[in-house]
Image (cartoon, rainbow, N blue to C red; front, side, top):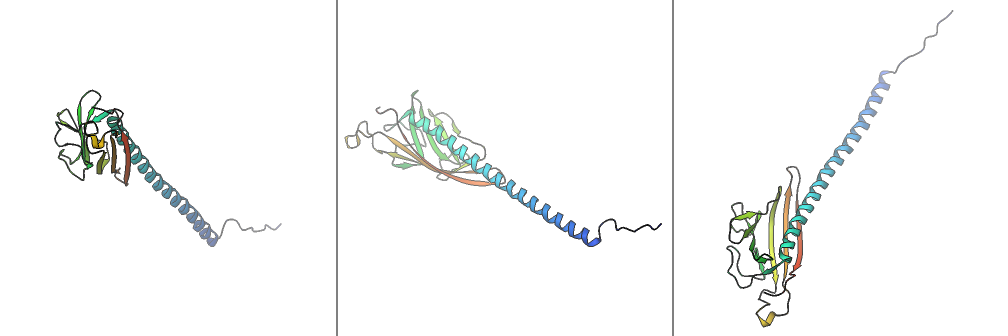
Length: 192
């Protein structure tokens, strides 16, 4: 009886081609995964910057909406009398507390380029409106009317409106994004 020899296994060329195809598919999958991961990190950075920008904007909007502009002083330094455009704003909240918001440096000195937004309440110690990972690049309060509508006939019957224009930068160590914002707030209380 004769035993037939059958070829078992793969040739070297077949193994090299199979390995090459496997490496090619795995490389494509890993590349796609890494690209997806990078996109996810960037999206998280944008989402967090938008949330922090919204939080800052809503906090300031609530404070401004429920207060009156102080056109007559005395003013808390570094805030002064309302002007058409300024890096600082003084308001009197519903409790009668004077609040001064301004753009300042790390030490709390007024600065046109930030990176912090500060609050001084009733001439007491200044405190930063600090949100981790956020620096304020620019911040301007536009006030309309710039004259006192309560006592000045030329701008009477005009409800005070504050427009905040600025940009914040959010950085999480790997990604950084600049988020501009603008919002206008009218005062609920009209009158001194």
